[in-house]
Length: 312
Ligand code: GFB
Image (cartoon, rainbow, N blue to C red; front, side, top):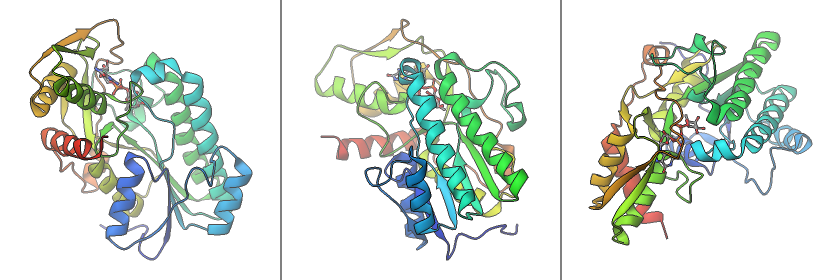
């Protein structure tokens, strides 16, 4: 397969480089000696267009991986929809507009699987906008959909190559392990680890445990992002799913076993389940030659080891 773009020798800006995806992408790019640009949030607020203009004009990246965003789990999305839609729209609009203004030819925009309509079947990219969104993260999804459409529109109108990538539920080292704003895997690792240390009788899992999720380890996504940037020559969105799904209840018991917590799991149905299934058809990316390498149990053990080493 021929490269449509080569990262080698290019100035690569990864926005959001301190987060789980950004930090894993930086680690990989630096390990293969690529030229990576980063800027701390306190030095560049992506919500301010003039500052983004100034920084991109001054540093002239050749390619941008726009990874920065306000992200969170089901409860955070349900409770703070205005934060999710306004901050993500502001950041992505500023980065995409400034990228074009200052001649950046290639941009990879990190979307999310939650942009798709509720579906019980494997979801293909063309199903975007063909149905109702999951209410718990509607605002976040619509912000991401706007970013996806901006990439398509700029590519179509101006001939740049801006592509959006839709990963499914992500997890791994350097995820958010702080509190209930986080996604399910980091939350359960934190809660079950705490329950074990404190020898608690039981630990609360949110919802019925019936929903299924397809989880993708962050290093697998990083490989996909690099492959897409060099080989995917289309303005249409592309899915990245591991192909491995699990019921939340089985995930909770698997994490209980990995953490070696001997208490009881209580499923509290006063918390939202979200969609009952969110499984991607990832044939576009697998046809490019990518496949998920890190199985869920192995990824969970690696993430838990990281958490134990890095949690205070
Ligand atoms: O990962 P999560 O917060 O988000 O929740 P979504 C996944 C499932 O895990 C839900 C259950 O059914 C939750 O009820 N769950 C059980 C828990 N215990 C917990 C817990 O302690 N914490 C959390 N967070 N969940 C995400 C979006 O939706 O999908 C993201 O919030 C992103 O923005 C991602 O789009 C792809 O999977 O429901």
